[in-house]
Length: 72
Image 1 (cartoon, rainbow, N blue to C red):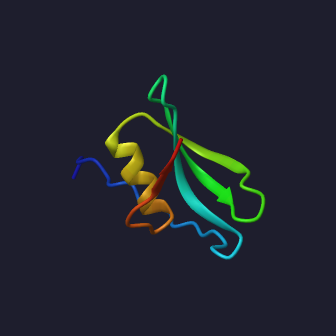
Image 2: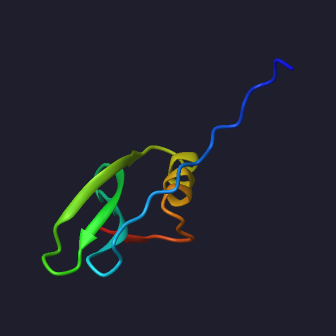
């Protein structure tokens, strides 16, 4: 009755013809940021800072992804 409610994952979409999902990783600090890279210009648009595996999984679930490419 008073248990915790599960958060509903809101699925968002992106245009796969224009951009691709990537995880931008810093070689020096190890910081990771999930976002989308424009296929024509290579410009990266940040969406979410990734601090742990749960945040990465939440990003993947939000956009309906199974895996993500890392860029440095």
